[in-house]
Image 1: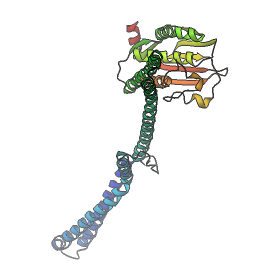
Image 2: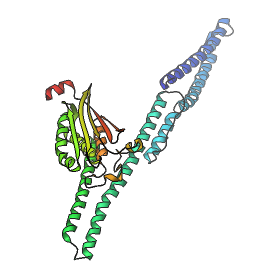
Image 3: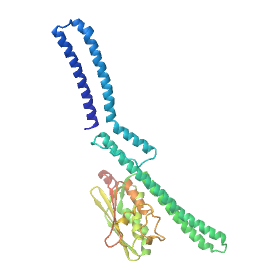
Image 4: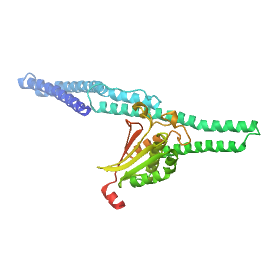
Amino acid sequence: MSVRLKFTLSYAGFLILAGALLLVAVWVFLRRIIAGLVPKRFILLHDFAPAMGTVLVFMLVFGLLGGWILAGRMLAPLARITDATRMAADGSLSHRIQLEGRKDEFRELADAFDAMLARLEAHVAEQQRFAANASHELRTPLAISQALLDVARHDPTHDHGELVGRLRAVNAQAIDLTEALLVLSRADQRSFTREPVDLSLLVEEAVETLLPLAEKRGVTIDASGDITPAIGSQALLLQMTTNLVHNAIVHNLPERGTVWVKTSVRPETAVLTVESSGEKLSSQLVSTLTEPFQRGTERIRNDHAGVGLGLAIVKSIIQVHDGSLTIVPRPTGGLRIVVQLPTPPPHTAKKSG
């Protein structure tokens, strides 16, 4: 039974019991009057009125005591939820209510609160892990720069041209990491305007931008697809597409690799598929690739390997666009990444077209 029904039946039960007691008392005194045992006036003034007062006092005490006990039993789950809320406010997110019993309003509230605590605990843990990883990644280029400067200070004869070149490369890495962190932060805040976007045009732009890198690495890009309308931020979706194509180029075969990029439209869904050749990857490894600073293998640490945030940014952008991301290893090696995004409403699409 629901809490509302329990309260209703409880109140009705108390009311019926009180009415029954009152009727019994009236019935007793009416029988005495009808029997003519005592004068009516005497019964009313000296017997019936005090008895009714006693009955009413008893009903008041019984109602208060019974109501207090009943309310305590019914509100006990709410007290557990309140205690859990205080513990969460004090920073303890691992506590769970785990309310037993039938599924009533309190049970639904407790289950929803437990689910919220679980998501909040996972989010806090992810943020802490992200902050630790970001600090570590940012410290690395700074430590390298410090070491290079120390060498130059203690060795005046050192080739300054080489030093400047290495410092420039390290500084560029730090800038790329900082910009990636900013993009990730903006995506998580959902601070963007949604507008109709054609994914096929974004693919063309991303491929054109990354074509020199693909040619340098001996990778062929095969892009196809018709007009694919989606809804969201053009800048963020372009970042997502660029990251996916860049990831497919960099994490490919050492030579003669291929990247297949395709856009398509399904009912109320725009689909972007990016496949790449490469070495065989396990499903366990693939499941970690969207975590910040996760790099699949040591092989990808090169001048174009990025900062380990490419797929993390992709995942974040897709989430804030209410889409889905699927990453699976290809049987012959490499990855198959499928992005599904909502399409704009029909009137919006017609207007934009």
